[in-house]
Length: 640
Image (cartoon, rainbow, N blue to C red; front, top):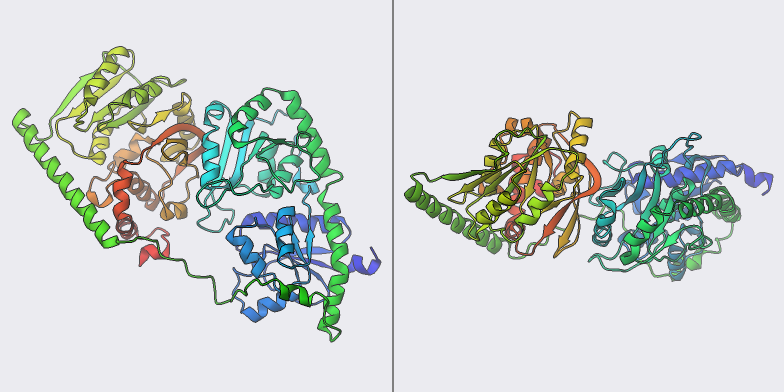
């Protein structure tokens, strides 16, 4: 490198309001450039200009889109800068990046797969191999036993990823782990719960033995890619965390079996279990990977190579700008056929596709009216039989009266005779806590009351109160009736078809003790049945809560909070969304829940559930909630 080249400054452009992941990458580039002897800095408040500097634009699909510049200004910036593309081919973000690279003299990608795809489009491409920078490795004090997390997952939530993660629950439920996913519904700024960046992320990885890499998959959750997630996995390797990934391409020169472990999705649970039971192998893979990414594959070397390639290109750009000959790459970008991207602001979001909305709402209203009529008839029948339209039969186990439980588990039953004993068995299997169970049967027609009584007879050591309604009154009132009889400080809400892992109750109670201000605690749930995947997989974040109800009712709530807020709302305007309404009510009052990023419960999915009926009128029910809790940050489409 000549002295002149060494003095050429490097400006690394990144969106000020974009995804914080990209800021991390930009910081690495600046650190590596400085280590190679170049003056370098982050720029997030202007467009690149042809001033003789090396202008590197990290994630052009964010940097340009999140600014308010016209099309001509963006094209001028592209002609004097080198974009660093970070997205996976086949995704909308990759296509947007390609469109915004038009006119760039050189296009860079951090993965071989992305580089090849850009080359096919006719770009002059350079592959920037990611590696470790000095600040990436979190220094663990000598003798400090910091690897207290067995398995960590860090990545955006997709149906396929969640399905594969759910398959790991039988191995992970009793191991310390951190399953951290995030929503794509809004830009990731760094304020979202569960997401970590910079030093906080490196510390988490240094505490973890294994990181799992699962491919994103297509929109339907099917296999569609074998992309090696360089950015995430280099960070893990730099901190001695062993990578277990699905088969991938684009990982050279890293070697399977030496620097990371590779296996199919259906083998991942067994592979992780074997690895964690083989500390020597963990140590060998960890040491080899760390030595590679901090030594011969360090990022300092890669960035120095990029800058050496960029120097003559920047000189040619500067010459062309000051009246010299046209740069030689001009014909290349015109051949590739990627359409231009206009700069009239971000494209508007399409409205939710809801065909026959009016007819669906009419059907929903008619079904609710029929349900109300049946309930009214049931009340009359109860009045004739018992002299009370709301008659409740009460059954207690012999241990109920004198029980002093840490936790009350509330179970509501309506025609779940075939699965309720499995649910009760899972509660009775809880460890490290004392439990009482309050069961409300909402006038089941399938003999569920007798099934529960039979279970109580076989488990008389478990404090159980069964309240059997003579007339159906709906989910909200059934839960409220159970809550009235709860005696413990913490109340765990559990539907009669869902399950708990043995450590669930104790772990959630610990979370509430650690955060006295939290109104409730919940964990990630392993969904099984007709639609496997994850539920309740993200932390408490009110903007996400306004996008969708991602927190299931299966949560541990302080009894005092339930009493303060009057329990569950029980009107048909929120039919099927009683739990969402409660979370929104807490959010409006400034309360919060605490998320435990472990799969501690199981959520049974069935095609004929209450949710299917609720979905008939989902847009109208959303509008009702948005109007009721108008101070919350609802998407604009819900405010119209």
